[in-house]
Image (cartoon, rainbow, N blue to C red; front, side, top):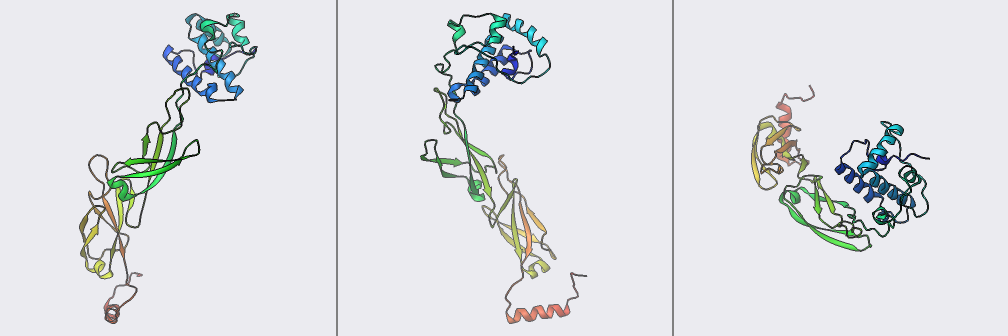
Length: 300
């Protein structure tokens, strides 16, 4: 005779449980293995019967005490995997139950779960997850987006979602009740849409800071200048010190992405010195003159 570990069947690791903990464990296990959610799965049907048998024994104080004495002797602190035991065809109770708790008449409240396909436990539908790509300006200012998804019936359905201004990268928008349909009157699942914020040619997002390029001419970098930078929602003037090099950064506080608290990150500008590919005759002569008089050699 296989000893039935009712605690293991309900995914409980100890016999020291409260009635509330037992009820929660029972509901979760019953939902997972309910025949309506596992159509045609005979193993799930047997597991569901064992779950109800375990709950019937452990929810009664007297039968729980009797069972705990056997449990301590057979299992104790040693963990055993779930095992099914034999039961007569269409019987609610296993042979193990009948041996230790008597050949109970299967009627009235003892048969609440005998016709398990007739018992309708409301089961919430599964959630659905998808994701969409958005630009930095779209998420910075907020907007409405339309997405089309194929339903379980194979039909296309269009959803309009309101993307709040300043939503963070990888954050999810939840549409209540737009997931898979519930079972036996259970609520529909939800639709979760993950937002992927894409970098573009102008801005790159890292946390709440925005990165952009500050393109300078060789003479601006050598002499220093004041440059106007285009931010995501306005412009800013920055001082460029004399002799700045490519790769150096200039930080503009408070001109980055929204931080969700009413503030903003920083705009980080990376210097890139751009050399003209085409020169006028005069420009060429000036560069030639500079090459003759300058003693600067970056390779030394």
